[in-house]
Image 1 (cartoon, helix red, strand yellow):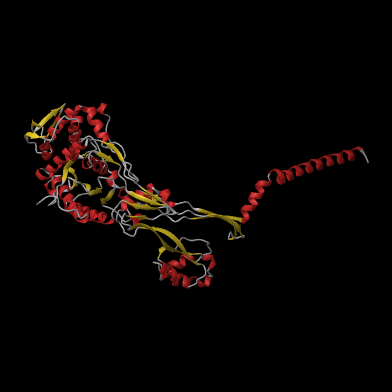
Image 2 (image 1 turned 180 degrees about the horizontal axis):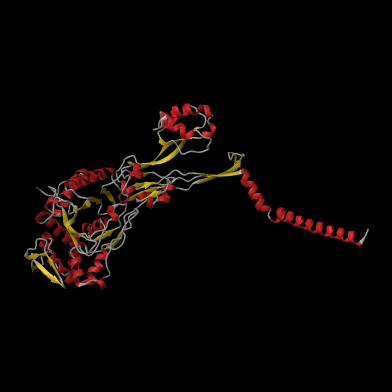
Length: 563
């Protein structure tokens, strides 16, 4: 054998040695280094993992009326590939009696070999689903689905919110407590066949159902509040309105109504998504004269004035470059502080603001709960706005005293009025009475006092002043025969985006409580832009009176005053 052949053989041997080494390394890499990875991939081919949905918690009113539940409905699904070509028209004809489509349209949808098409019909009743199942048609599937339902329709819709198609709570209580209501889904893993069908369970984590919520809302009071508010919005040709009722001793919300509203069962049909927001906690506005008793309370609490303190006031007063006048542009002359509230005298309130000064006024405004969220357990609450007092001009100090230059929500005004009704105490508003978890353990919520804002004797004096407003002032139409009612009207201007205020728009409000000497409820009525009345005394005040009469009757409160 010559040298050339020897070289060729050596080269081949070296080549095969290299190839063998590479193959050996790859085999080592696959069997040792990447062993765990390939085991996992192999397991993925015969192991199936599935989630087990939890049952969403129910929501009840305080009188145990079911407000939110879970209904079992059915979706009609067809797998065209599993239906013989010659049977498809017959199947289409049979299904057309259950689906709002002609047989020809259904045939066009299923005349193919697809494994999936969109459900022919969603949310069928159990009766409909059973009738289709009884036909025993191959390739036709009636699949159960859990659907959130609201048995009382639109009652308390903006308090409750709704559950979207992904199973998540949106707005209201459903949004705020979504995790607690939703629960925790379970998981199941097991062996599967080539089609992914599980035939043996290896491990299972059970689902933990969501907690049930019992609200402070009284279903009967809520219903009446919604009716009274709806009637008022229609009667006074308003754009919208809110009505809130609270237990002043505890801070429990007994009713929270808004109009217009919607039915959470049909939330997907709502065109204006602003309807989902709860205006009673979301829609901040300049409150106008219902703010005056609070500023007066601050002045009385500081010892700067008393209910019978007198002074003489003109029709207008100039502050910086602004002229501020009474609502009638007439002078009331010599007035007591009680008469200042009866007349709702802006000029006198400017004088009160001067006595208080910026720091004192700001302190009381913050102590009453303005400029921050109240902490109510509902989504989309607004904090309102209170500017830094260091930035207040003299004019701002003056206008804030009668409810302009500050924004508040209806709930904030109600809770501040509660302070007067409840001996000077600011209570935490709450709307959840108790939560019951899946094991039956109860978490009962307790009233919480946030602060002592004014002294008890100050609260009593301001209460008497507010009673006089209803007896002698602009609040007469809020009166209920046989009872002492305390309250205050507010006709608030509406700011224009371009600056200043609209000349042809206003918001009418009334905040008050009854019976005045031992209040069973506080109430706030707000009507947005009533078109056929000019003042809140002719819109919000009578609406308050109507609802107060129904409440006193429902609560079986005996008359406290001889008519």
